[in-house]
Length: 117
Image (cartoon, rainbow, N blue to C red; front, side, top):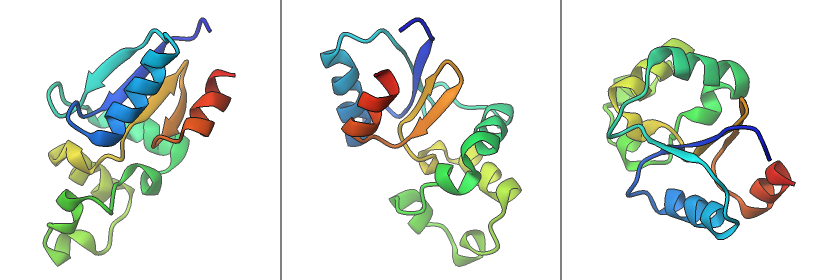
């Protein structure tokens, strides 16, 4: 594979560990972007939302989202979702795998196997 591979997420996340272990076990070369430590910018989130949809990116099942006041959880559209994810990157579903610009959100071994052929 010659396309650049970047995996985005949070270092301490269990799902991230599974995804990175999967890549490491296959000796895949990739860059890791910890958006809790390094951050993520609005342009990147908007581009991702344009590719996969903000609904896919926003982790509504996580404790960070569930802990929001009800007013923040209602009436969510793309702009509000991106603002929430910028303010608290833990609300971005993980991992986001970027392979040459093609995105996969979440980790499932069979999906990764298909991505890398």
